[in-house]
Length: 152
Image (cartoon, rainbow, N blue to C red):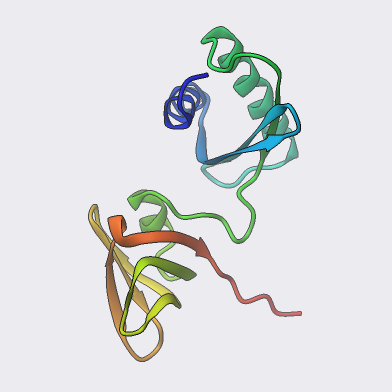
């Protein structure tokens, strides 16, 4: 099996030709098999038919490129409302949205920050927690997700 980044890259390139984006790939052991969970999106959002089509495309790409040896389980899903933010484009797309950021190292005695994405460029993003604006370099971010407030 190729490394996870290589698999994600090859699949992402193939899906991009069809208008889809691989937002994230999670690989887990599932008994004697590996579970590959691809989270996909497209401009304007993704629906169930899109997820089904993306799943078939991913399966075809994996088989054609011989990316995974042996038995595996493939899942495709939308990124969901608490979608992961990994690339500068993700942060730029969601400026004004609420996000939760976990840093690799603590600053000001904390590693978790929640607030609105106030800005983003190619190297860093700005998070506004209502009282302070924090600038975080992407390389210092361990995990970032949208964190919408759900009102019922």
